[in-house]
Length: 568
Image 1 (cartoon, rainbow, N blue to C red):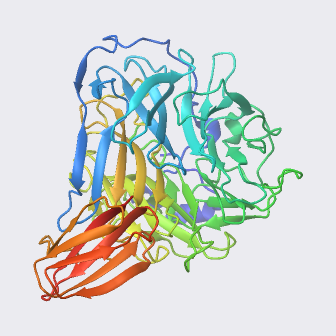
Image 2: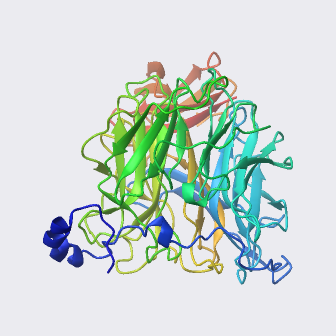
């Protein structure tokens, strides 16, 4: 076994017996020993069945697969035929998602599209939905017939979507282009060169400040198309990009986030095994100034980013997620980091580990928090992904093998926190289990990441699985039961509410003659509280803005019913 370390020789000698006992202790292989995967090494092959052999697409509506759970989820396949069927013979992975802030029903997902699983050739696949993810249109690929990989999507406050894609050619490796859509993903421009490299990430400033609409991107320095630079920005909505520049540390495999005041955070792992960093800039937002970096801090996650795990042989166990609390609550300005981590000196394959900074990324908790609550150290929790809702709720998903010990069979799991990551909800299983090794394209992995965006009403998730026997891309919307702080909901409804949706008046039929009615907005604010002393009652919410509300009814025997109300 080969060890890469920064310890003195004597320390390694003393630790060696323990290190040899730790299964898969070896940290990620150094960059100069790694094979570069994001390059064209297979010819393009069209779909073996000419996209005509179809099968039913997987879909699910209902509560989570965990007992006594009230989290709801609906799941739809995205790379589908016009009649919403699965296309046989292809593969798709590494999805990224954008949601229109002006119309949450408009969603775009991009992914690596393999038209034929017998070829490693991939393209910039994309799909869009105009009905909140219930149905999807899959036109094919941006720049069809050209090798593309590593999709990253984001959006601005005007409702424009942006698609960042690596486009390697045999004679020109690692250039990245940013494509823009002003019509909810129906059409895209021809793309703007931004420099770039493998693996690039991108974020857009939606703070409303000086940097509003700025686009930021960084990538791995040793696979850069514009060395020695590995960072760039656009201050004109993606029409042009700055000359590539360097970050203060060699960061890679990490996402970016913009804070309330326009400050930029870039996360990533260091070349030093087990060292995870966050770089911060407060002037990247200023178009009149070159980007400088205020600080670089070390984030303790208790282990290594997992490279080439058995469960994803040619990939990693997930990237580093970073996000910021932009709420008006007590966690405002908190910075959060999460990743699937192989713990130091442990046989555990990977845990979902979380840490937070309460001072703008300058300092971090000395001890990270483990989000997965399984007791076994033999399970693998991989592709850990995090996003933060505008109301401060932290959503986390991952793939988990706990239901099939000794196997790589995985299911989607979920947990959330409403107290700045101090405590986490019991883990919930959100999907059936699946074999992640099925339907591999020749690259022999299920990609390297998922992507998620949280709203006050739930989490928009883009992910991949093999639930239909092939590797495909899916959209899920996860609705946690805690948006109003009401986790304990009775299965026995004590009221019925109609009409729903409503323009203002709600008629309530109650099983008890005396009940307590409370109505909450999605940020947890109570907007109405009243007692009802009859089995029929009318409540007027016409003065409230359109949106989603939650009606909580408490009966005489303390039974509780929670009903989601849509106000038109």
